[in-house]
Amino acid sequence: MFNFFYEINPIYQALLAGVFTFFITGLGASIVFFFKSVNKTIMDIMLAVAAGIMLAASFFSLLNPAINISNELKLVTWLVIFSGFISGGILLFIGDKVLDYLNSSNLKRSIMLVSSITLHNIPEGLVLGVAFASTSITSAIILTIGIAIQNFPEGSAISLPLKREGISNFKSFIIGSISAIVEPIFAVIGAFLVLKIKLFLPFILSFTAGAMVFVITMELIPESQTNKRKGLMALALMIGFSIMMILELVL
Image (cartoon, rainbow, N blue to C red; front, side, top):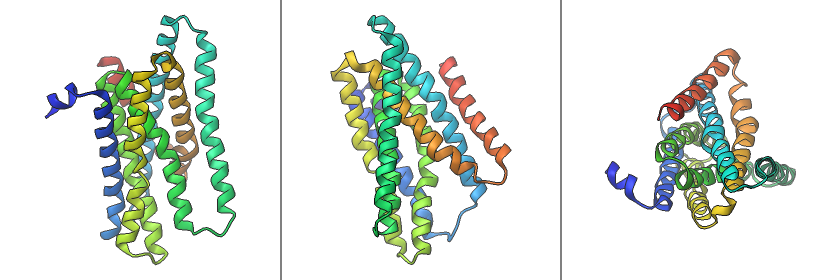
């Protein structure tokens, strides 16, 4: 089975990885069938570890290769990397402001909750696609695991509040799960872009790194730091970062 996965086209690898992270989101959302609430400290630790893994991946799996490839192509490296990185952050910043504007209207809270989570799942899908198409498969698999880790509490973060608002368990589960459906879709798009437009690979890599760093600093770190045990959360982030860093350097 593992040999099959290693040998198939990177686009199919990215698709399977996206389906896996989507499945984990659904698994997190399924908690609604068994619990009314989940221990916040455990969830926050998971978010912090995932943030560390993704933060390390943004450099070791995305920015560093982007710099090397840009140098090989004899591009203006600092300009390509900066423009890609900042563009990824700006795009998500604009998307976040659009959601804030929509939230000022009388749309249902459940729709807005799903929309906000879905928005930041898009760059995660792109990151998966880019990783499988341009980095080592080991790095891509580790990154997939990191994204999956943070998708679990994400699913429950949607389904449990909806349950408290009176929405049925099944509907809460479906809404919590569907927020990650964009990940396999954009994983395929990311892999396709990298394979077909290699000249823009440094920009695409740095763009996805910028988008991921924005998500980490906007969503994951602030959410984990709402926990009273802030020092523990910071340590969990460093552990996640160290795990990804060591695996990247060793493997």
